[in-house]
Image 1: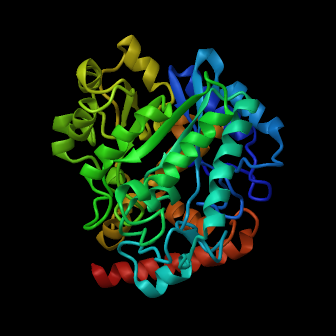
Image 2: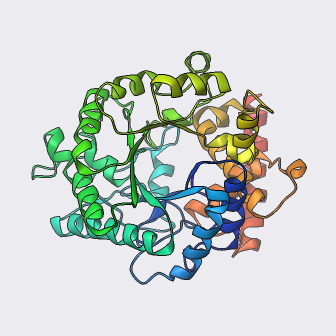
Length: 412
């Protein structure tokens, strides 16, 4: 989960990260995985991403690692490159395996085109540099005191873009067949393993599927997971979806509640193909379902959004204080917004909770307004940093409020 807490000028972690991850570590987590740390400051997923690259000041990362490992918690740094999923506020020319632009669901193309730009196709030199940057970030993470890394190859980010035939139309050794499209991910894993110590943990996060017709599908994902065994991977986190179809960010459906988690059936298939420890994240609601999954299907239970509103929920589950997690489905109250932007509202609302905990806001005052979040965060991601230009933000907030009020009258 992206925290959105880094200094926008330096992209370094700070005391906010330390406070948040210390609270999570002390709340009973066995393994804590950071939000996606970018390997290249030229290409960010959002303005306040953390970046760890050659020349970064390791001092702040060492403080973060120490805080996140409080009480014996194992801390992994999730490392990532957004590829084409870069907003124009941080990058006017993203890179990707092929020059295919990003479609933002529910948003008119005229608006979407002003938020993200079509990427340029990567050269082989670009690909080699990406491998080097992932490796450098992993090596620096170990030097800073992190216990390992998780390579983010899901959710439509760069490594995931190479895996998908929808976004990878290359005709060289990095495109075409599933084996070729997996070459970059394999190369990143091999390069990292060759440079870090044997005890340094290497996880990989992969999609079970993209949930897009003609995209990265389940059979390919199963074959990919099978191929990771000889590469020295220590764990696999199963997820799904991309920015264009974020299945994992939808509200929890009744069928998911009955199964106990997203992607559980896929995890059962994976279990037959590999002995690599599996982590399943998303949709877990009850202790009963978690225990059932641990008995036969997965090795780790991943929690995301529940930790944003209750940092102590792991300890409460382990002690028996609670047997069911409280989940939230924030909405603005207007269908014309909640339909196309519902997943974004949910993501930003939970992120605001993380930021409140990092700022030591009392939990009983931790109920951010959905409209304020949607406006402020979308502004920060796609246009400018609202904390740097408060006057401009106040004017735009007023204009947006007026437009929403007018639209609501028309709809109602």
